Image (cartoon, rainbow, N blue to C red; front, side):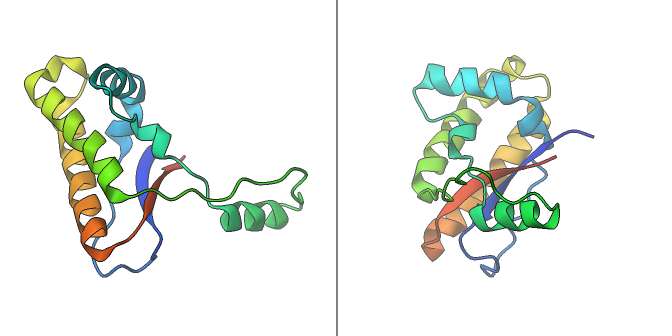
Length: 132
């Protein structure tokens, strides 16, 4: 089972669909990072942030109290993510051989774009997370 990237909004119930598969984006992480650097935009995983509260709860549930300070959750403006997503979409549309599965990557980037556009309209901050 492969990992998947997904968007977390600061509002858990924003009133619109936020679910995106994200497996192709995770599978193509290295290629997408290279493309982002070449295009001089922020790579997707630079938008990653863990959830401080969830991490503390997980550690306590597992009987392993936090031994080190857990970093605060970072939130990002949707416009920052849209810049990256649109640049990646444009590049992969013109250079589909840049990734192994361009159809899935474009589909998932388009879904990310839709979520980030709505997050922007609702004034919601976001970050990426990884589901293993």
